[in-house]
Image (cartoon, rainbow, N blue to C red):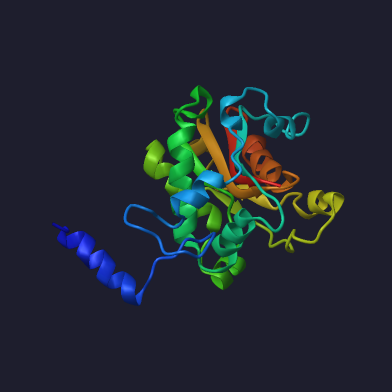
Length: 232
């Protein structure tokens, strides 16, 4: 006998079908945002299980961090590029939240990604936040928080300067574009704490390094780690 909840799901699906954010096929009961077939084929890195991995090495000599990882590999033209585009530009808050939950459940398998005091998404400038309506990094952070049972802190680290978009900038221009753009309000909140900084995509690392520097400049006792949903 079909349960009432399942029957309602099928009825709603006739008018408002839930479709996979990668392949566009209808989702079945139990699937969230992305179908199991597409989820299985996403290019995982598994770098959260590797000490001194290649993500961590991107930060060496630039800023002091405890550990770092990216959950998926990003390639232009791939299904994952479609997912990230919808997450960032097509009101894809639910995508960020769900993918954050998937990632968080596996980060718990690593002793390096446990016992954080705060999860801190890379902040948007208020003007960009008002224009877009949401911060995709914050929704990823909330997904992680749901599984890892760590509070999301969105107010202490802030973007003090509205810098131009990084999308079409060179490596050097990205570094110049992020100098001094972040700051923190309350020094005591992060003192002697373990903080996980979260963003959607790691490209050069310039933005994440700027966030870490802003915290460590005023709170040198803070232990910082980094997570991104993808790495380019």
